[in-house]
Amino acid sequence: MDIGVYWSSAVLEHKLERQDHEGRVEEVWNVRRLPQGLGNGPGPDRLFVAVGKHWRGFFHLVPEVLYSPEDPACPYALIFDAKSWTQIHKTVPCRPFRGWTYDVPPDLVAAPLSPPPSRSP
Image 1: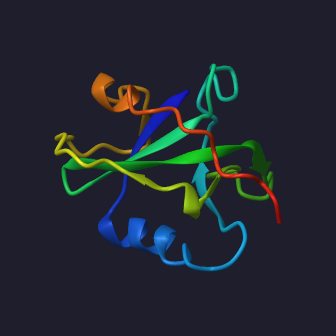
Image 2: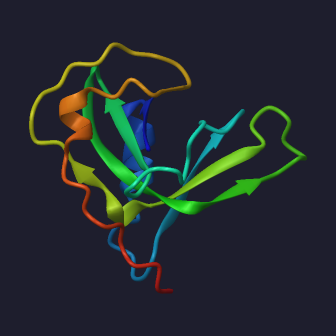
């Protein structure tokens, strides 16, 4: 499954800043409700990121989801490895939006379904 989010450049930079660390580098994206269909697709779930009115790339989501009932505003956290970042090398425009979207442009979704990085510690 592919979902898209619209972040500021500062948020994307923060998510990518630990890419050079050794081992797996897990980051999270907190959400109010879970996207429907996570884990049900043929390939890995991907989180596409748009910044500055253009799609920039995607992360592979890990199969687990964190749940924190103490945070009613955003009780779920989608987890991804910052090292799975795959940059999009063509300009694909995107209007700013809030939350997430299932409406990721088809030419982005057709990006190779490379396997997610190994989950070794």
